Image (cartoon, rainbow, N blue to C red; front, side, top):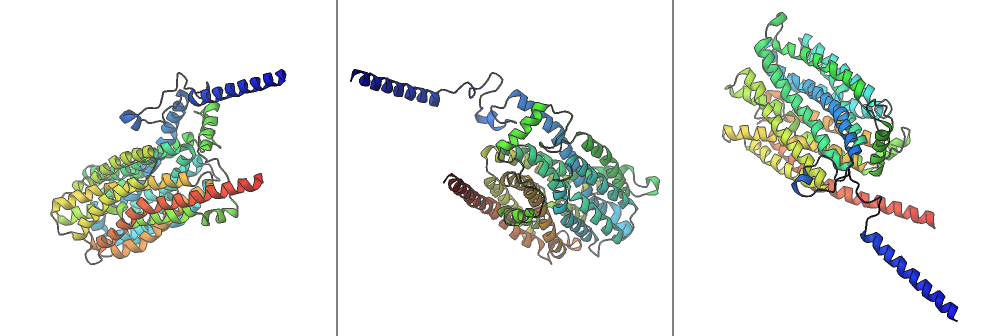
Length: 508
């Protein structure tokens, strides 16, 4: 009997010891969980909000992120800078002598140049972004860059509208690889909490390209008019091509591909492994393959419809063409010189720059994009309401034209949303990014021709252009502010439920 009592006492003592140990583990971090000397504690307040890395990031991981920012992000920004430089140079050339020299204007030639460019984008974007999952990005993206730049060069020889239309189609076809391809690659490397601000910087480079195109044309108009027997607007296309050559070479040498295929010379073995681990910890380990199943995975997903609708509404606001319409407005009032007509609209880019940085930081820190989209959409609605009324003081119209620069943040926010929500299915993620670009471009073609023909600029009174665009601004605000967050919550919850039931069936 005494032996059994002793056994009971020993058992009780062991249970007490186990309970104490369990409580100790709950309140005291283990050695592996305890921050090391080189890992800073999480930061709070203002300093934590503006931190460039996740709190607690080790020195080695910070070095990895620095290398990605230096090489991956820098080339992404340079490539997108060239893309927008080449996309918008046509409007700068148009208001700087092309229209008068070639007799354009009454036939909406500028609108048709935009249309043929968009047709190329529609055809190219989804295909280009599936190709990038097969051909390494450091070869594919520079190849597309140098190809479209060659077509830009040929623009300087054009003398008829039809020649511009053909070349603009070819430019759009190869430029279509830039935005979805780079966005896809950024999503392969950066965490969810890092992606919005990097995507914002990437898209900001496009805004700088728009601004630089205006400054370059203004400088060429003052210094190159008549040189070599050519007008200054022709020199713009030549200079744009020359600028693109070193960027393409840099991409081939330094773009790191993706974490699971990289052979970048500046990353050591630990950094390559850690880069893979970071993405796998986010639930974005590459899965799936490019076969017939890709169509089912894509077109039965909620992402393809949700984000395509969002990007289509954004495109139908005509926000990306506001800088062009602003230049046409300045030319129409007759108070400004050619250099001023090229320079003043770049203020839109300055607003865009600040907005993208701010919204990128806020989206990363709060972990939600819906509230940010809602706030920006309300600002856009005010601007478009002023344009719809139109009979307002000149100063207010100028202010609203410049304030529309806030529109650009929707692009990185939607791109980051796609990268986050598609997980590790790289084909689905790539195709959605390309497809939503094509859908937006496809819808813009008839809308711009019918509602915003260049011959009706800048008021577009007969076509009710600004009023119709206001409707899409309101729809965009509601869909991105409430619709997409609702869909994401609903469908992601369903996915988790299905996964739980599958695991339960396997366990049974």
